[in-house]
Length: 365
Ligand SMILES: *Cc1c(COP(=O)(O)O)cnc(C)c1O
Image (tube, rainbow, N blue to C red; front, side):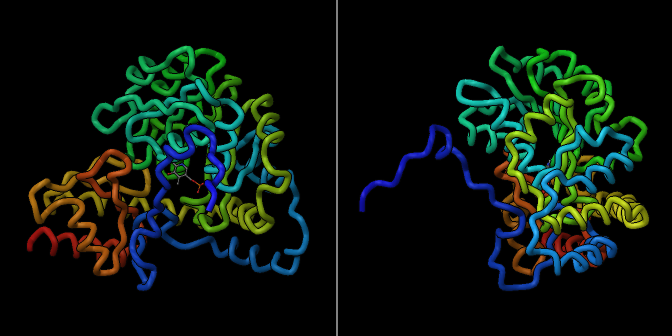
């Protein structure tokens, strides 16, 4: 057989992203606390909207996601013309990198930041640069120290996945103030709805309003519980929105995602219920795990990062196996540079109870 075509430099440096969902054989019904999806299942209104559109699936969707952008603009008080929707925020991350970075450029993120940032950077031939964190938290000074004339894009997940930590608005503003005007700052606020109750957190809208080089990313995969439909959105300046609208596919967001998205945005009761679930069970989970002697990083999101002992028989890898063999799937963290930690999503009550019970059993053995 002749040799296959050679991809561009950087592509073969990418380690394939292993999702939380496919780390064990898909033969058993699993309790899945590995991907931070909404704990309550989708909004009943979103399910109804999806069913109602089924007979229209022979039609192309509205390429501008007009109704969805209008619903988001109303809910958040935004200019709809500066919202761009994507097939998950992953697509928007990829499109922003494709538009603003390439070979010879650097893409900066924090040490334990979301994996799609270095993956996306390598995909476009750019060099991902990880700035060290301090205490599992984005370190603005370290980020600024890592900026060079080649830094084109800077990512901050706020709150961050997988650490659960967040930066207050003045720290994000200080990071922005230290960047050159031609560098794009992308605030990935995938978990904003879980953190918004805190008085020292904002998702970044005010920074987007004030500066043309700031983008806020949001997703429907987490609190809105529509991960399977692939839906995210960006809020950005008019020039950045124009760029995204040029490079995205003309029908990049499916009709199912658009109609379910509108219904989910308008279902305020579901959002309140989801938030209340997290506000009750995040502290519960943190307390139970701490009670087992594990070290739990404070989290402003819908998951916790848990540090395990390095003693043989009690390690993170062994704990993961123990739970997986008993039908509870949590997330390995070695790919995030945290081999002694595991991430557990704040899922439904019965699944959390089972995870805590099994971890107690594992640690006592
Ligand atoms: C889950 C997650 C996303 C969402 O990705 P989608 O493509 O919208 O499903 C984005 N950023 C971070 C940090 C996440 O954890």
